[in-house]
Image (cartoon, rainbow over all chains, first blue to last red; front, side, top):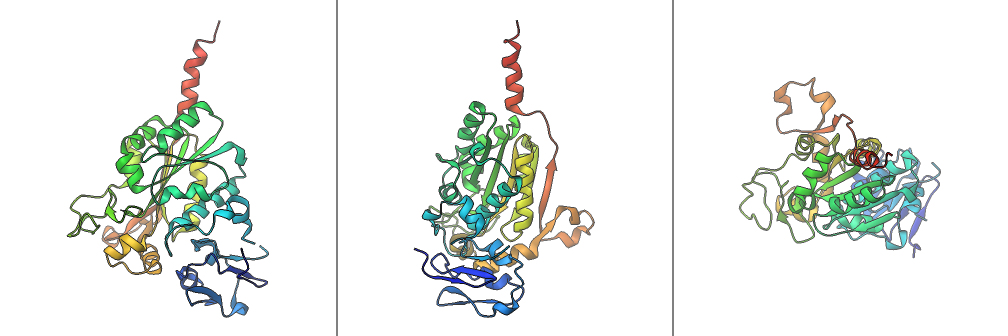
Length: 68
Length: 272
């Protein structure tokens, strides 16, 4: 069921659960994310500092910090 | 694979949840599981009870012993559970309509009894599930489907109501102020007595759309810009608080707990 996952060393995104609300995009302090075709997309993983604010405020548990 | 916290505490086969895109309820529900995780509680000693409404769908996704009850009556069921099993940690998830309108009497009397239950009120300022009717927390002059020209009733101040009715731990946070929300829930669960946490959510679908509040993101930004922590507010000029609302810990004054007091009466007659 979770075959639409994007997993990087720092962040993981489950597109099946994402509803594209854009909360993570807005409150990411490093502009790591965008919404494209109503789903969140990682565009600049190098900038990610793994602060976890996306995970904290994602209402759909579709994005989280890895290895913490 | 979901995150560690979601894998541990959620019924992942029930996800994604039913709430609208951008609904704050998912943020609050995760915050509750983080608070439970931080406290290191035995999950077999936790019971989560809800009433009816958008908020009350939450326990369906939470991997604990859970009970989805009737409208407004979550606190009545929770009282029964706690009385029969005083060693359980009982957590109630309810909404602004469920807790303060339909269940208003249950709420004030649970507060008055100081029974060891932690109630978390997901306040989205409207009845979402039934189509956007105004609730007791819809701000005055705001619109709902049943108040198309604006609501003329004054909104309840839930923490003030709970504190006056006798709750011994009272706090308020928002979906935006998630870290504060987690710590208030932690402290509420730790308090041996009735704890009430108002968690201000966002309803972009009904409350937001009816009142031109913008997207979920804009509604969370509004929370960020208008909430003032009570600790900071005491040092601010009164005029700088115009149009703002308070968050934080409003009351923390432990008193004897109801099931313990009740047991004392039973014990009186056990003596030879």
